[in-house]
Amino acid sequence: MLKTPPLEAVDLSKSYKKKKYKKLLEKEQKELYRLQYSVIEKKIPVVCVFEGWDAAGKGGCIKRLTRAVNPRFYSVVPIGSPSQDEKKYHYMYRFLDGIPNCGHITIYDRSWYGRVMVERIEGFATEEEWKSAYYEINAFEKMLTSFGIVVLKFWLHMDKDKQYERFMERKNDPLKQWKLTDEDWRNREKWDEYFVAVNEMIEKTSTKKAPWIIIPANDQRYARVEVLKEINKAIKEEISRVEKKEKKEKKEKIKKMIKSIK
Image (cartoon, rainbow, N blue to C red; front, top):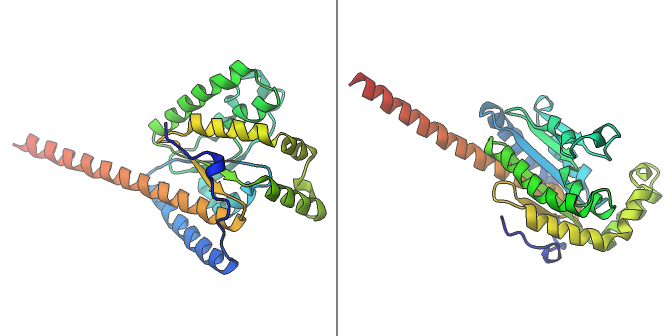
């Protein structure tokens, strides 16, 4: 397991001024655009999981991410409540189609972590079921990373006051009212319960190969840039690992050829 700071330790004061934000955003988007072609060439699959408080800015981060990549090589998987048909199967069933092909990026807008958050708090899963899910999720993600899939999990974190501010902004803006639902208000009433559940989720499912990356999201500009930075960093590390492996395999192949000639 990877030790990750609890939510209460996150510095939510981090922010960017508009001018600096635009400059940094453009820089990171260009870098991701460049890196994606190495992802395609090296056949590296990437999974980005976005979780966070309601109104934390998941959609805004995903929008800035997708603007920087070739649309032929990524897909966004929006996750809502399971359908009646999906409820007949194991809860992981509906996420399997999104596993990316080599060289592709899959972005999950919410994910299998609903099992240990919404389903836990709302009583859609029994205590035995959601507690078992920690092991099941770790095993699933280990399977992905063992295959060579880069798994990045983002928790967009903000405080309760900032959430209320954004809720009211949505309520008063005719173009944003569709984003605010009765369910959002109900979830807000259970903030403390979700806070405990999220901390436990991060503690029990943050691994070296599939870490939770907590993004301070009181300032949406800061969150958008930091998400791109983390994606670029992880992709660079994986490209370097793949190149080292290719170099080693090439050397071994040459050695075998020389040995066969002798």
